[in-house]
Length: 593
Image (tube, rainbow, N blue to C red; front, top):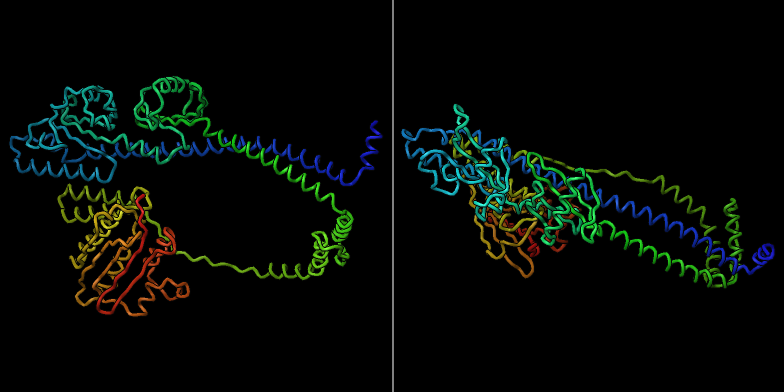
């Protein structure tokens, strides 16, 4: 039986044998490959998804802890401030009312500065005396007003220097206070540590923490929570009921931190991970639906399976059709190719027919005639490789370090009552705050114009008010977005190369914001010395043929950034006239988001 079957297969038609061979040689390896691929893909996507989720979780945890650390440092700085200590300890019987008012105003400015440079929502100071400033504003209060508050009693009992708490824990807090987390620091009398002289309270909005988590989602449908001793503080998902949180918190107590755990709650599977936040009793929790991790894997497996079936069926049909054609020419062509493989580069065959096989045979002959030439050309091409030169000017500063340094200078200037330095540092601080923009690439036109105002203000402090800046802009255009720091280089160029080159060294810059259809034009006009044709080409020629001659790197940088962000339609244009000034126009599209 086996002999007859083997003989039948051996003597069968070559077309059938080819189809049979194709069936086994294609489908069996393809099936094995598919199984292995599905297994590897499942493991790989599971691992990559959770690895990416871990990285995002860790980044969010770091940013939150960094924010808590900054608030902690701010509280320590305020607690050591000489003005706060003086206001808490001064005997008011011989302390003039005028000095009390000056102290109050200075402290309010210090609080405002800290709010401007951080995410702090409010800073309150409770003082244990009858000073004229206590209770007269929204930031300085009498200590007796909070001595019966639950949060104050809790902070007094706590052994921590800086005590974090959620106002929702206490019934005697306002709805406004419940929207924030609070840190409290009690200031004691050095001679009697049982006596509380004053209390500092810093509040930061809960919405900030939720925005931080939403900006860096672990996955598309993941959820984020902050909890304290199994009590929910904030959540990014309002759809989960109380039973969900109760079950999750109970299971968390039996699992380790800094790891992903799989759990079934109700009818749904989830992955969850939690970690403690330094210097608090709070935990950050991230929950990922099972579907987010394995849903894409399932869809990919189904797609690959369908693709295998479709490709296999199509390949079988194509093989069947091709096997029905005359095989002699194929065999002849195969034999010729085998001779070439053996090293006989002079082989030629007689082309038969004008169909694809005939054309292939003729192409084979042509190929053999060209092969030596092609090999030689390839060798020459390999020897003709050119080296590339990379030219780059790279400058790197750490704006956060500079910003913190300015903050320190400002505090010292306020403390020592040097208003000129305070004005300069405040302007610089706001200037770099807009430059940083919390990592955003785009800001509003209003913020961009403010950035220019601060730059000119700083410049005028240095050059004795030699530059007058005027801004004309329709209020409805101020909300549109623009890539940041595109006006300041243009204004700087106008001042240095236009106004300061005049005999008087003084002048005016007019910045206008105009609407043109679906575009916005930002015009910077100066009354400087203008530009000659040669100077114009150096600063405002964006032709690559002028690469070696032109200067004006700041202008070119802005032009290229605009084109990169919005397309070739947008960029910088300029008109200038000697002794009459220059007008530079930046065209951008209307973008609200």
